[in-house]
Image 1 (tube, rainbow, N blue to C red):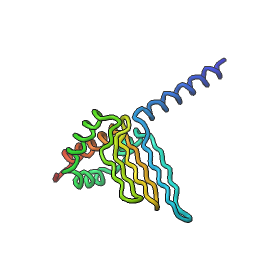
Image 2: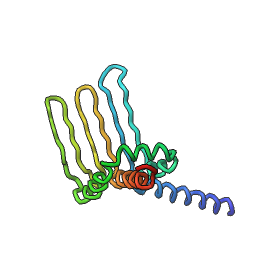
Image 3: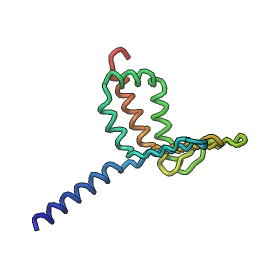
Image 4: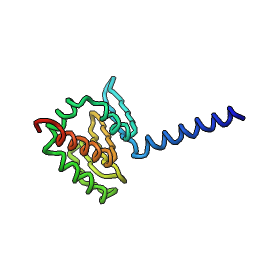
Length: 147
């Protein structure tokens, strides 16, 4: 009976940890090269992992990144906040011969698709993750010395 209770407790903890980790969604990167020996990369990571990983980046590197991005961070914060008002909206859809580029929101994610004869690239990132990264960079820019 005790073993069953321990197993139930462990299983419940695993379920709650999984739900917490995936609460913000998933970042998806798919790259397919259409040539002999071409790469096929399909990378999925919980969006919450990005915010957590930023806490492990050495402060001097984070400050350097925030210095380079300082002029764009306020714009990214505004855009990611406002894009939530436009779910399932296409902002850029360009076709030029065999090349096709599409930038859109799909639900609460920003999705970028590039399709051409050489390769296909698909990236989907939750808007909340982009906003969190921008806020972290803005915080570092305001807190960092000499900025």
